[in-house]
Amino acid sequence: MRFISQLRGGVKRCQSLSARSQTKLLAQNTRQKPILHFNSQGTIKSTTHIHYRNFSSSSHRMSDLPLFAELTAPNGLKIKQPLGLFINNEFVKSVSGRTLTSVTPINDKEITNVYAAQPEDVDIAVKAARAAFEDPSWSELSPADRGQLLYKLADLVDKHRDTLATLDTWDMGKPLSVCKEEDLAESINTFRYYAGWADKVTGKTIDVGPSKLVYTRHEPIGVCGQIIPWNYPLMMTAWKLGPALATGNTIILKSAEQSPLSALYLGQLIKEAGFPPGVVNILSGEGKTCGAAIASHEGIDKIAFTGSTFTGRAIMKAASVNLKNITIETGGKSPLVIFDDADIEQAVKWAHIGIMSNSGQVCCATSRILVQENVYDAFINQFVDFTSKASVIGDPFNEDTSHGPQVSKLQYERVMEYVEKGKKEGAKLVLGGTSPNANFVSPTVFKDVEDHHTISQEEVFGPFVAISKFKTQEEAIKRANCTSYGLGAAVFTKDITRAHKVAAKIEAGMVWINSSNDSHYAVPFGGVKQSGIGRECGEYALANYTNAKAIHVNLGTML
Image 1 (cartoon, one colour):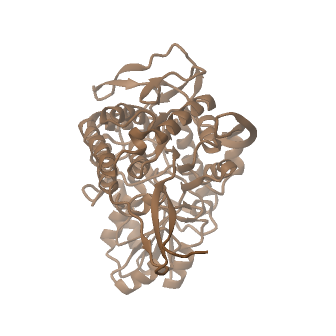
Image 2: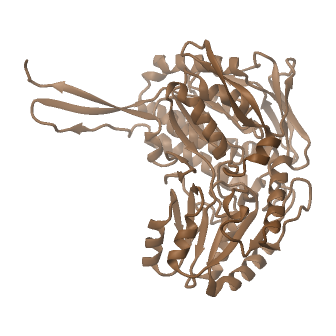
Image 3: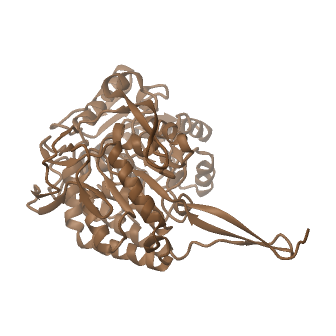
C-alpha cells in the first residue's frame, strides 16, 4: 500500500480552490473570456463568456521557439525537453506561435517556454483524435494488443523515472524523493493496472424470454478531453489516460499551465510505445483559452476534469453545448474525526500525512480535524510537536526535504490570506502561519475553530489545518457533514462497530478508518456534493469511458 513507506509522503491529489470564497478571489484572479463553440466539423458556431482564473504563468508570442530544448535541472540531470504541442504523434508549433512560460516555484526562475494551444490548435487535435478513433489501426486493434501498448508505456515510464520525477519537482516544487517513490510508482502501476483490464471489459446476456436474445456491449465513448491539475502532474495524467486507452478511446489531454513539462515528455514515450498517431494528443495551454475550447468543442464526446469546484462548474456549462459525458473531481474540505478511544499516537501521524503531504496541495486532504473533548488538548500538543519535527522545509531536490513550496506565488498568497482570516475570526494559531522563504508556507495549525469560520468551510489548499472539539458521536457526524464538499473523510476509533456506523453516515465518496489518504489506484476515487461527479481509479473508472449498447435479436416473434 502506498504512502506508508514514509510519514512525509506526498499523498493526493487534485488541484482545487474554494467553492465559497468567490467575491474577492474573482475580483483579483479572474477575467471574462469568450468560449468558442465548435460544431463537429470544427467550425465556430457561437461564443459565450465564462470566467476563468488567471495564473502566474504567462502567455506570449514566440513563434521562433524550437520544438525541443536541452535543459539542465537543478540536480544536474540533462533533459531533452519537448516544447511543442503533441498532435498526431508529432511535436508541432501552435498555429498562432503563442507560448507559455514555465516557472519553478522553488525560486521563481523561468525553466523554459512551451507552445500554448489556442482554439485553432484544439480543433486540429480534435480532428486528429477523431481520425484515429475511426482508423482500423486503433479501432480494430484487439483489446489484448491495446493492453500490450499500455504495458510497454508503463515500462518506458519506469525507464525514464528519474527524468519524469525531476521535471515534476522542478515544475511544481514537490520533493524529488516523493515524486520518485510515490508519484512515479503510482503512475507506472496505474498504466499496468489498466493494461490488465483492456481485455476484460465485457457485456452481459439478459434473459427476457425464449423468443429473444438480448446482450450488451461496452463500447468506447469516442474522443475524450482530459484536463489535468498541477499538483500531481504525471500521476493525474496516468489516472486519466489509463482507463480511457484501455477501453479504446482517443484523447486530447491538456496539462496544467503551471506544470506542463512531464506531460510533454510523456508524449515521446507514447509514440515510442507504439500508439497510433492521433490516439493521444497532449496540449499545453491556459484554461481560459485551451481548456475552454476543449470543454465546448462539439467534436469532443467526453470531458474528464480534475481541479477547482469553481472551474468545474464552468466546464459543465461549456460542455452542455453537446451534452458531453462528464467526469469531474473537484474540491474538498475533508474531516478527520478522532474519538477518545483512538490510538492518539497513530492519529497524530496519520493526521500529519493527511494535511501536510504535498505542502497541503491535495484535494482530499483531511484539513478539518474534529477531536472528542476528552483527548482534545492531548492530541493538539502531540500533533504540534510531531508536525514541528516531521515536516522538513527546504529545497525539494534535497533528499531530506519533505515540505516544498506552494506551486506559485499566487497560491502562496492565497494560503497566507487564510492565515489572516483565521486569526481575525477568532481561531487560535498554535503553529506556523509564517513564510520561511518565497512561496514556502510553514505547517500551520489553528485550534478552537468554529464551524462558521471561513477556515472551516473553505478549501485552503495548503499546509493548513483547522482543529475543533466535539462531545458526542452524533455531533461529530453532523459537523463532519456541515460543508458543501464531500470528497474524503477519516475516522479514528478502536470501536469497529462505531467506525462502520460513522463511516456510513459521513457524506463523502471515500472514508478511511484509522488512516488518512492512503488511497490506491485499484480503488474508486471521487466525491459527492460539490466534490465531483463520477469516479476515477479501479474498475469503476472504466464505466466513465464506455457506453453500454443493448442488442436485441428476434428469435422468432413474427408479425
